[in-house]
Image (cartoon, rainbow over the protein chains, first blue to last red):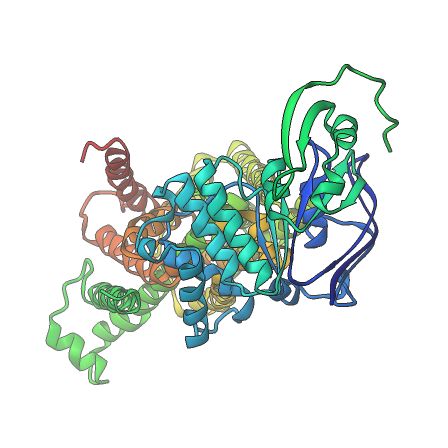
Length: 265
Length: 332
């Protein structure tokens, strides 16, 4: 079932066209990776999907235009894991994960039993039950990443957008996070993750969107998207792409010789 | 202890503390009234002197102290939560300075002599005008930084206006009158003052208490909060209106009283789960108790010139800051 449709989506920040003409359709039960070099517009696309930046074109959730949805309605449909691990107050892990239930609560309503159950489920899935009484700002980077993911899972939304969920994590914690995201997708959710690690993206994602300078360069399976040609054009690297394993592995070799940059938007 | 029980325990303790402050404020003052006389006055059998002291002087003073303290406490907690900065306080929006400028205008032009309500009404007018300026300067942006910058601009303008009034005051007595008012006091306040301030304070507190959940969501930053369904524009609007109306009303009857909005959330945060919403109600009770105790101290400290409330709260703030500094430096 189509959950999210992007039709010629563009974003202008200040005088700069950051994103232009992105069209794609996403169904449930899939883990979709958005990849591309720094400054390509990946995070802006994620933020545009959530209505966090004004966008041109059409973004529809289950056929409804994003602009017609109230903030709390949208929040119940899409959980968001923002970039970075900034927390402004030293609250406990349980309290932090509980923030994921805010879209389901009124300004003055109390936490209900179903909210408590959802918080427990999210903490169990992210394996942070034993951290519940710890202060979130005192956790290690890996622990904090799992706790923040639990916060996003506690929304229990049919869609999750994660912006660079692997940033500053060691390989073990990267695998933990990607396992969780894949489990969420295979449980029926649509999960869209902005990623930098191409091999992790190829291993875990069902589909990849390759973005460069605000434009969609390729959209398809990891094997179709992560070709040496695409990597050369977009990242300006020579890379060895091994397709003999269960998933493509990308080994960057060296910078491609500088060529005239393709015309910007 | 379970978080809910701990919170209830804290609220009960603060309520008892506030009640003790209120009773102390009714009992204590320069005139020593024995407890039996106060009791019979409460029951409606008091003599005229006791009735006057108790109901015309101490009761409105106590109620204004409680209301102003509660407003400053909750506004401080809300501003710290919204700006995600433990050093924020209600005056950061500049509305308290603007309210003070309104009052200074009433004193400077002699309008306060026309009617006792003139000064507080002009003060609230100053706060409302500053709010319009704040809206104009901060625009429709959702960023808290633009609000801080706009607040600094409004506060600086208002403080410049106050400095101008002091500079141009026709004689030293007029300047002294302005300075004395600026130091803050609850002396000689009547029920008229309470009825002017109370509606503003009730509206202000209601607007600020409404946004507890939004302030919690801001723990994740502005994007994180919006993705949790928080309409940051509306949150900011309620916060601006709540602080301007409530603090404007408070300053109108008490003068500028600093530090309460800064200290109280600091003192109470370690006793809560540290989320911004958990501090709002305790900060209201703590502010009410602290300001009332400070006002009792003003009455009991016997020196030649009457001590001003703003001076006492400022001195109270210093040891608390030192304590925090020592904790931060792990000296204690």
